[in-house]
Length: 433
View 1 (cartoon, rainbow, N blue to C red):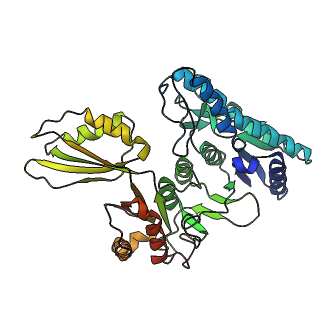
View 2 (spheres, rainbow, N blue to C red):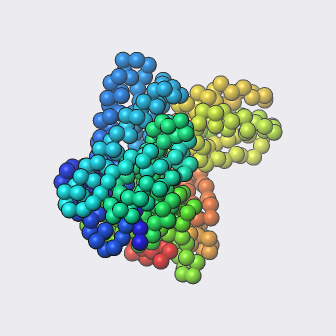
View 3 (cartoon, helix red, strand yellow):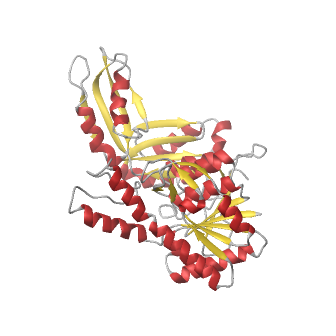
């Protein structure tokens, strides 16, 4: 058997924790499994490196940085490929350090290990610095080291483009590295070991009665990840779903069973709702007096696309005297850019288009593959929110998701109400068991 284990920054934050990881890896190998390990940078290290870059950038044309909302802050140097290349050279060193230290710790504990960085792993990417896409693996070196009896410790988050330059995979890139590597090696499982012990029905910090989910489908996990659940990065779930890699999210601090992310098993009945998510990074834009003629909507959203702004929900009202209203949501940190772009747009029509914006909203979503076969889920959600006097501003649905926009002050109340209303406090914790 072959297992890929990924350890996050908190798991390798100190030498003591690295020693603990080494013991855990060796214990896995002693069960007869080949082990490939993917590591993140030590907690805080990437931010430290970005801070150094910021100090230099502040003397020049702008700043770069890492945030919870994306890989790097847009700056006056955005699009400066020479600068972004050096940034990737810089931040990739954090994972290199973790990989080398863990290999040393395994050797000190009596095991055999070798550390490999992106180009040695054979991870090939496109040429997009700071947020590269994986194109493939040439993993002969890893196979060779496994055959020699080594634990192979890989630096996550990084690869090499066709020109031989180091690239990084963006936020959560080590998760993506691990799952993609597991897919390429046809591993039996990819374990994501972190400081949480699995995927929960909702954020336990908001709802203490949230329950750990035993099994969840790729589709459900993809929806939850896209809605702000920070357990796994979206692209890693996409890889797992595309190649059928079983993913086990579990704690690096104990041996308890975590959450398995697997294909949907149609032979067993699924829970109607598996989880509830709250996304605070939303803002609403309403355009009034929009000419109701062919091509207008394309022009509006073309401007946003050109500015690399992702649009979520969209509502267009019925035409009134040749004009209409259009409402949509964008990430809150893109709101100013969206409004600025729309103000520059000239549309033929009866009068000037008015732009209204509202950053004080949030999105609440319920997710579950059981919605495919159960009617009235949306109706029940609306009833639950109505009982709490929570006004719904927008609605979006899919086969396995219902999302609503509410005022941000009601976000946590809505989450708790839906979590209780769909029985997630005491209901089953397996959606695909």
